Image (tube, rainbow, N blue to C red; front, side):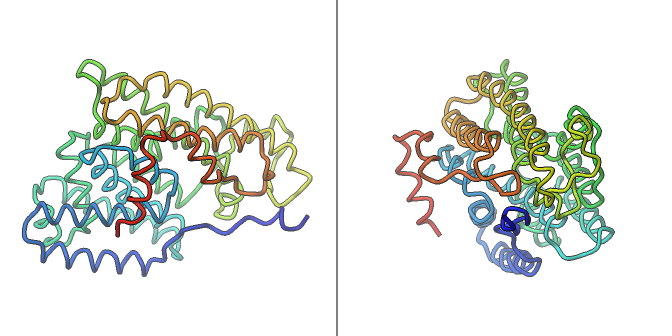
Length: 338
């Protein structure tokens, strides 16, 4: 049927004007704040709005974090979402996207040594970047990790295919997802100091799993953007030279490639879950919930009940079945909070 051969539109995207309006309003509020703590609170709440707008699943599982970690996660999410939106949704040429990312990287370097978020904003640094720099400073996150993230975003502005799954992980997923997993690991913290290497390994596996699940789910969206994350070696094994999600004759072969990506993601989910106890106890419920919710999505993608050309999703009722019932009360509170 024709409705199964057209890529769906991108959901939940903000326009560039909306991002600019957010920055302008938030900057004004930060400058009027009485002290740095109030300014930080304003930035966190904006990060929460961004997270809730773009990722229902991740928003839900982060409600189970303690406040000390949740605030940091919301600031991190805003700082990675905006560069991602520059390359994904801003209606500008590739060279302009790279120029924007370069400028964003320069502002990040400016923000790193500034201890006060209000001072950073007064100097012209965007509030969500000033807030992220505070997280980097206080959690001890290596500054180079965000540089690697921005490098991955630059590659998205001028996409190219990847020969193998290993190349995809090492040359793209490292910057697009693994370092973000490291950000969160530093914020969550280990169960004890000697466990942090294991914490980082678990965070790495979870980041890879989440990114592979996204690749498997978003084949149609990625094709529309001129991107290909299905490894060429896997496509060659299916005798596909030029993949086209709009060609029903390729759906069976592409479905098998997607199923292999999903299976690889499942291996990483399993390893991530095996390292769950290495994280600080007060963060484990949220991390476990994240693994369970996205593992459920990954299983549906592997089974492809909606078809290869349709973006798979998990109904809220199914998500709730894998979340801790004792924590349900946090969800309506989160959605009622402005």
